[in-house]
Image (cartoon, rainbow, N blue to C red; front, side):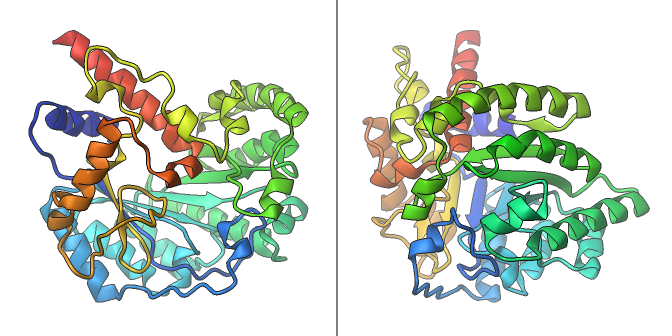
Length: 363
């Protein structure tokens, strides 16, 4: 998938246009948990205004017609709170696209786990924030969540072995906070016992006063660098792909909530303005929020002027709003919501810049 990103960006850089590689769907803002670090902590009146299943079918068909390779179902709330999210997942695979979902893992059952394994759904990211119920349940603020999540992860492993399938690949996603940073090595060991293929850590993005309390302090950040080194050694030994190397340089943890600074760093390429962009999302991805509002990524752009209820994906992708965002980034201006960007995306953009530079040096 990374090679295809580079290919499409090179098409744009050459003066031609390319279709998006990926779309992100956020089916609901409703959730069965109350995570202490979530943006929802200071939102008491969440009016979802969700798109219908028929609308999602239409979006997925349009995406397929535009040669979109990947459809990611992300949070906002818990995607599986909507019962028809499983139907959305099946629709993605019926169109031959790569399917990804980010979930807290509590709302699966054996029947739909078996079905997802049978259809070859590609990637399931499950949020797990501790190696024990004591740590995890206290952070998600609902007792019994750890037990449910582990039970379902074991069922995925069971059905993959029974049906002799490699997919879906399972990822554990952990939000790094003061309460769990010492537990990371234990989570890596747990991931191995659960037959997990990926382990990714994301520093908390502060959305509330509670989030500020959970954020690591200077000494804890320094201590975590040592924990990350040891945890990476073990994860690598187990063959679990991970991003723990990114934490050996603590800047990503310190700058959480101020990511515009990092997006703009190390991108002063004199050979090509396109090679030095802070972010490539408006050239690669369409994010569709729960009410149909469209943005270039998973973060809500309150200045967006587009809605999928009113236009087709293709009209939006080549329309005024996306062209404006592209021009702004080409001119070195990042929208205000970029300060909340996640570490994973900041690192991804850095990798893209490096790969594009290698390509240009080869020709």
